Amino acid sequence: MRVRTGLASTAALALLLTGCGLKSGSPLVDEVEPGSIGRGQPLKGASLTVTSKNFSENIILGQIMGLVFKAAGAEVLDRTNLPGSISAREAVVKGEADALYDYTGTAWITYLGHAKPVVDPQKQYEVVRDEDKGNGVTWLPPSTLDNTYALAISKKNNAKYHLKTLSDVAALAKKDPGAVTVCVENEFASRDDGLPGMQKHYGMNLPAANIKKMDAGIIYTQVNSGGCLLGEVYTTDGRIKAMDLDVLEDDKQFFPNYNAAPAIHTATLDKYPEIAGLLAPITEKLTTPLAQELNSKVDVDGEDPHEVAKDWLIEEGFIQEG
Image (cartoon, rainbow, N blue to C red):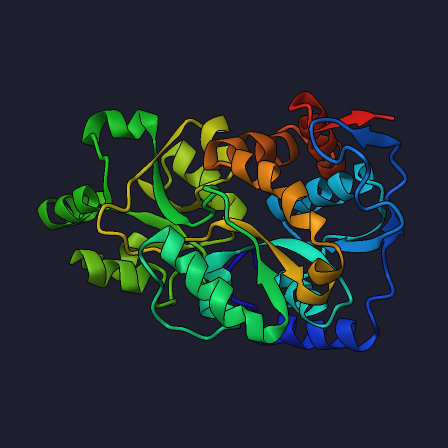
């Protein structure tokens, strides 16, 4: 389910997992030491659990968090790769996990139940931070990494149409309705913050025959091969660059902001306030292009998310091999 809403089955599974106390997980055994962060090992003696959702980007972010805590002296239990958004979220709310990188749009719409996103990314973060305090979750400042929805087109096809924005798509659909075919996931095809809402926002009226529904992974290959002119993508997906796609600008700001930010169990942060300082320089480095690069190493090159996270932290000088 990526970073969007949890379906009923996901929620049920989340209840099952939290009811069982999330007994699964394994200790991080890496021999890592402080680099530019974690000097003096401010978390020495702490026992912390990190979690994540079950898609590549969020697993990488969970591994980054765990390795930072480890280098700072903590014993770290790895409970990343939980199914869906809700299970990882509930683990942090209940204190069965101490921290994860979550997404502001997911919190505002899915966890906190608001229908309309906040257009400004910083204000979106602030309202999430303020409202979620009551749930025992503290949000640290966000990154510019924005894993939101977008439409993309192959550069080869775009040589003919020169599309840059979703307004350009709306104009093409009006001029030549048959030209605009779109590959989307089933959920995106029916969600208010998906294709129906986007069409309404931009004044599009695509014929039903021009909308092709399929699994997310197939969308990229269909767009790349010309099976569809446009495809639903996630802005941080590594396949965008690997398949030479152009992402169209959401120039009328329809899609929510899904900026990644540390979400910490408040009691944990109260006990170990050093966590905020450890994660701040990491979060500051997280951008959408960087996420595309790291995600590509997993989704295109087949590398292990843990090793991708560790290699990046070492390359940046944040931690060192022990």
